[in-house]
Image (cartoon, rainbow, N blue to C red; front, side):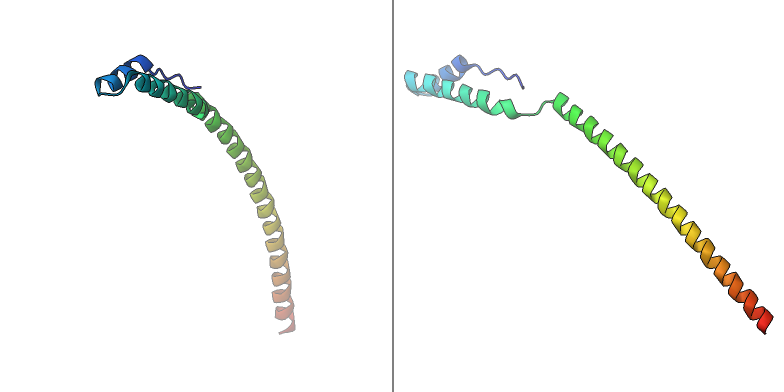
Amino acid sequence: MVAITFDTLKYANRLKAAGAESRIAEAEAEALAEVFELNLKEVATREDLKQMEERLSEKMDARFLQLDARFLQLEQRMIIKLGGLMVVAIGAVATLVKIL
């Protein structure tokens, strides 16, 4: 949670100096302090962001390892298919050479 200091007395005094009634200035200062307290509970800190970055980095690293493994499998399958295709092509050329 983010720690923010809000000087309600200073704020109320500033409102009073601007011409606001004392009770209204104090009530507004308390209300504003409450708003800060409630809304700042959900604000992310630098530590929160750093932890999220580390978790995302770990997940991305794991995903890239999976992709690397899949590309390696794909490469192996393509080499086998290309090799088979070359054997068939060489056989067809050899057969045509013997026939002609």
